[in-house]
Length: 130
Image 1: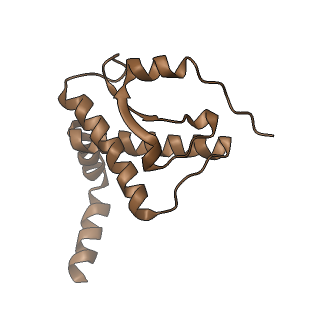
Image 2: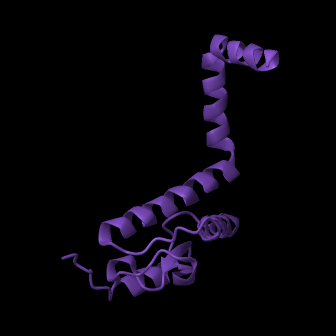
């Protein structure tokens, strides 16, 4: 315990240095940025499911698999040298769209290009909650 207390005191005494170090780490660490983006995209999909009343899995193993699918998608896009928004960048797509009451489960997810996803979304009709 004494080491932890000494570390906490050092962090408190050097707060500006620690904050600057964390900012630089987050800015320059590709793995961190990709992981954060993937988590945010998954969280956004879950919030949309709740908005439209879709099924969201409660299985922790499946939730980990879904998070890993989002990470794989982001890494593949990064390794291909594509920027977000590029027509050939990859996205996680719901086979049955959320707006058509498609569940947020691993069986209903696929990785496709942004161009294919946009073409697919052209024909979607929103599911209105009653």
